[in-house]
Length: 264
Image 1: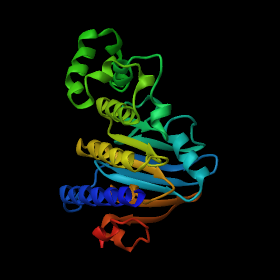
Image 2: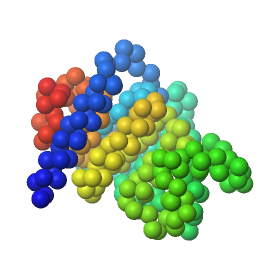
Image 3: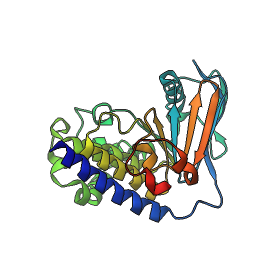
C-alpha cells in the first residue's frame, strides 16, 4: 500500500513539474534585483552577500544549521546584523517593518495559525501590513471573505481555527501571504515533516505565489522537493556562498529525486 502511495505521489509530482517547467519557459533575459543582503555578519556568518531576483524561486541550502538560523534571524528582523545591510529595490529596510517581505516559518500550520482569533481575522493579518485599518473595516473584511470563500470553502469561515484540518491550515497561511502581496516570500524548510499529500499541496501553494510575480526564497537543508520549483540554487557556509547553480545546470546535481531527469 505504501509503495502505491509513493508511486502515485511520484506520478503527480512528475506531471506538475513538467507543467511548471513549461510555464516558466526560457530563462529570464534581464534580472531585476528586488532583495539584497550585502556583506552580512551575524552570530556565525562572517561575510554573506545574496541577491534575489524579481519573480524567481531561489533555494538557499545551508550546510550548517547554525547558518540557517543566522540568515533567518536577519531576514525576519529578530536580530540586527553586526555589519552589512539589507535592501529592497535599492532601499535600506528593517525586515520586520517591511510590507514587501513575508516569512513563512517552519511548521507554519502550528506557528502561524493563531487560536483565539477567527478564521477571517487570521486571514486578514497579511492584508493588515498594507491596510492598517482593516480591523475596523467590516466591509473590507467581508469583501475578502466573499472573494476567497469559493477557493477556501465557506465552512472554514465558521469554524474555530483549532478545528481546521492540516490542508485548511496550509491554505490559510499561504492565502494570508497572498493577500499581503509582498515582493519576496521567505519559506523556511517548507517540506520538512510534511507527508506526501501535503508536500504536493505546499508545492502548489508556492507555485501560486510565483505565478503572482513574487520571488520565493526557500531556506533548506534537504534539497529534494525544493529543487522542483527552483530557478537557482546557492549553497552557503559561514563564509558566504560556496556554490551557485542555475536551472540549466540542475541536471549535474546529485539529488535523489525521481523527477530530476526532467532537467537532464
